[in-house]
Image (cartoon, rainbow, N blue to C red; front, side, top):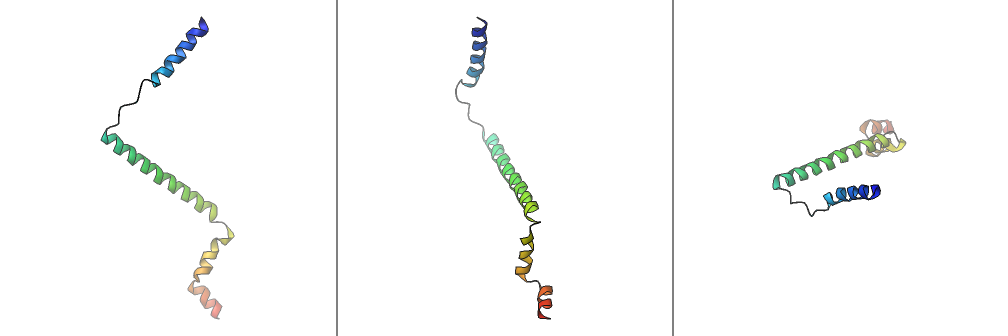
Length: 80
């Protein structure tokens, strides 16, 4: 009996979520949802870019870009 009563209680919890589809959200809430997801995507993108920058900056080939650009100071040194 005690097991059946506990089992029925669990069914009631699951039945609370299975009573049919939720009503559609209003246009204001849909707009807020879109704005939130856009903000979330931009925020996560910025965090990812910052993490990549911090991870890749100390690599030795990070200075390869400066050599490739051929800054005028280095060109003058090469001519002398």
